[in-house]
Amino acid sequence: MAELLSITEKQRQEVTEIIALLASRVSDNLKLGQVQQNGLLSGVAGQLLFLFNTYQFDQNLVDEAVFSDLLELLQDQLTDQSFELSNGLAGQAWVLEYFNQADEEDYDPQLLDDVDELFTQALDHDPWPGEIEMVLGLCGYAPYAARRAKFSKQHKLYNTIVTGLESTATYFENGHIAWSQPAQSVYRFDTDDREKPEFNLGLAHGVPGMIAALLPAHTIPSLNTRVTKLLSGACDWLIAHQNASGKENTRRSCYGSCAGSDEHSRLGWCYGDLTIAMILARAGKALDRPSYVDHALEVALHACKRDAEDGFINDAGVCHGFVGLALIFKLLDDLMPHPELKARSVYWVEYSLDKFRQEGIQALYSYNGIDKKHVEDFGFLMGYSGIGCALISLLNNDSSWTECLLMS
Image (cartoon, rainbow, N blue to C red):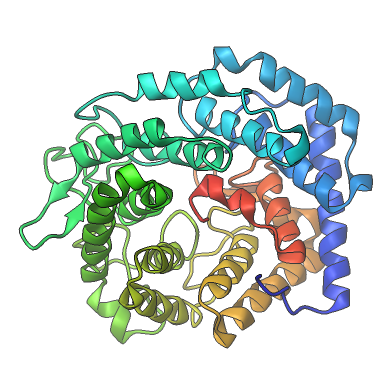
C-alpha cells in the first residue's frame, strides 16, 4: 500500500478547499450547458470523472442532480460519438466502466458488451492504417481494455491492439523495437519529409505510450510471448536513446521529444523524463528486469533537480503543469520509493499552494500557447477537472483514474 503524502494538516486543509472550489466551478459550468462535446480529455466525461472522484472524497462537495443529469445525457449520446480516446467513445466508455466498477455489488457486466464487440471489429486491421498513439490512435483503446479486463476477459480486444502494434513496429537488427509516426500523422514534427522515420519520445504520442498500452496485455497468457517481445525490444530501444547532454547537465532533460535530437524536453505527462521513467519502472517490474527500474530511478532522480523555469512549467494542469508534477512524483515514489522523489512531490504541492495563495483561482488557469495567455479551462487534461483529480489523489492515495492516461 502506497504511503500517504507527508504534508502538514494546514496544507491538507488548503488542498481540500481548492478541491471544493474546483468542484463548484465545474458543476456550475455543467449546469450552464456550455460544454461543447462529451469527450474525456476536454469535455463532459472528464468533468464527470472529477465530480465522481470528488463525491468519493466528500459527498457534500458535489451536486448529485447535476452529476446524474449529465451522466444520463452522456449515456444517451454514446451512439453518436467518434471512436478515439480524446473526444470519442474510447474515453467515454472508459469513464462509464470506471463508474460501473466503483461498487462491485451493483456491477453490471453487460453494460458495455456492445462496445467491446464494436471496438474488436472496428480495430481489426492488419496492418493498422491510422494513428498509433493514444490521444487519437490505436493505443487510446488500451485504457478501456485494461479497465474492462478487471471484471471480464478482454483477450480478443487486446489481441487486436497487439496485432496492430506488431504490424506498425520497426524491428531493428539488434532486437530493438520502436514505432515511427505514420506518414500522415497530425503529430509528426517533420512534415517536409513524411517518409522519414520519426520516433516520438512522449507518452502521449510516442514509443513510451506504446509500451504503456501493451503492459496490461502482458498478463494475458495467450498474448504473453508476443507482448514480452515487444516490451523488451521497445524498452531496450528507449534506454539506448537517452540524450548525451542530459547525463552531463543536471538542468537539462535526459530525453528529448524525438529520438536523434539532443533537444531539451519539458517536465510533464505528455513529454519528458518523468513519464518515461514511470513507464520503464512499470515495465521492469512486469518483466522482472531490474535494470529497467534502475535506469528509471536514475532518470527520475535527475528530474528532481529541475524547477519550473527549466521544466517549462507555465500552468497547473495534469498534462504539463505544477499540480500534475506533484502527482507524477508521488506515483514515481510509489513505484520506486526514494526520499528525493517523495520530497519533490511535496515541493510541487507547496509550489501549487503558494501560487494559489498569490493568485487565487487564476493560478489554475490553463496557458493557451496560441493566444499566449492564461484562460479558464474546466477540462480534464489541461484544466480544473484534472487538477482536482490530482489533488484528491494526493490526499487519499487513490490514483486508479490515472489508468486512462496510461500512468497505471
